[in-house]
Image (tube, rainbow, N blue to C red; front, side, top):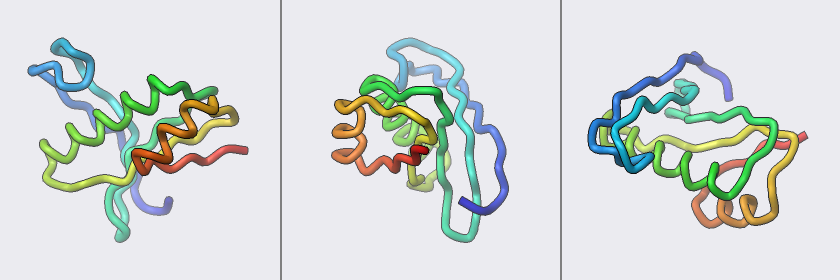
Length: 94
């Protein structure tokens, strides 16, 4: 992705992501090309896709920037792959 990598941590008091107040954490890459929220996982499920999508919407509301969303994983479930395609989430598999 290029750019500076850091961890974005936010206290989601309204429970937007998980349905109850919680700490939300995600890797963030900031470069000239914008902001990218990246999750590195051993496998990606459909639930993971929807969780990252909600984190992305929260990030946009809090930071005022619409991020690209991406997973890096060796395995992505077929249903997760379809959901990611529909939501515009990038998948990087090996």
